[in-house]
Length: 492
Image (tube, rainbow, N blue to C red; front, side):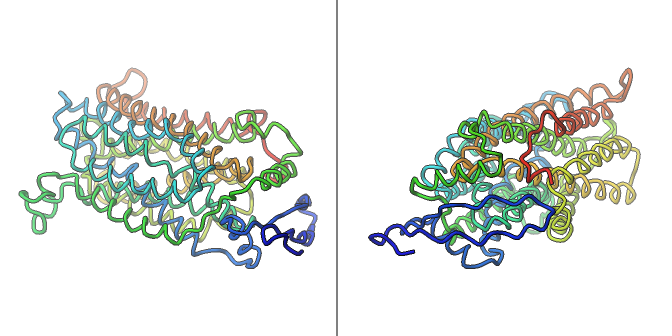
């Protein structure tokens, strides 16, 4: 169509899709306008002109999300030793108690700021939010590595969580930067990047902490890395974050800076969820909120698992631990991270055809069964132990990645583009609340378990992993009716 004053063009409607009989025919979009100077419109036009997968943008998303996520769990392999060196715990069994609160402060900060960051991204764009978040990683992650007191470590972690508001907007961004048929792939790049970062991050922490002790030929005790034994892993992550900040230059903005797309967004959502008017109020959108609650429960489980596994693996055999070094834990996480990457690129694209629910439930059930075997691994030694613990860790992280992708798909298909930043902000707020509780509670339970090795009914380490499984069972039960609400396309 012709343009009016060079500002607005009405484009012809797309050709109707072919119905194969396997899926319900989607409702056509009746109106679509192009606004000159709007970055969101420019990106939409580029996506219409090309049906290819935007691997370039997906790779930038993957790198940025990776570096923003690396600090979250990178401290766990050495946190036990860091708390010990800061001399805040009076007894060895109390180290887990103090470690839990350091891990919790990051998620507490993110809980406070998640919704404001989502609103910021919906008003000013996804890209500014992403850049500010990466800059906060560079500054506060570095300061954490230079911590000389327990309170400095706690405060810097809290500020990092407060100012790194990337999690919600990057998920919205990944679902907007490509055509609709590539949306699941875009979200899988975010979730796979996060899953890998949550595994590689601890491996970086495990290999690079205490470098003067592990690699005396390269790092002297008088150097900055000798005086600050936990600075090197933080410094490496901050350098990677600086590189990803440069990559942000080539990121296109996806937000539409005009008003008429709100009407289109409402029409689009109504076609997906049967014209429900309640979607205007996100808190009343039960399809969204039920998915967020389930995601939050499994986020609590994953965070508690990573902390408990890291503390359990490095704890002494007399406390039914594995007596691993931080480097051993780093090796386990590195191998798991590589395996998750291979899984995401080779196996998951085939599984995604079954839909989020049909991949979610089997992964949750298998994860529960796997975790019941963990307490008995403390009876193993040597090569047998290392092979089995690596295999178990790979499977556990593959199941966790599958669940996370499914939850993100359920959330982002429940809202429109204009709502995704705020919706993901709500998701991050609730998830971060659960994750803030997870390390603190996990640390307390771990400390209790070490003091009750000979329990009345079960040994302390078995109660530890049984508690984790109870959380997974609760989340699995909630994926069934009447709790979880699904739109018709998600039921297929």
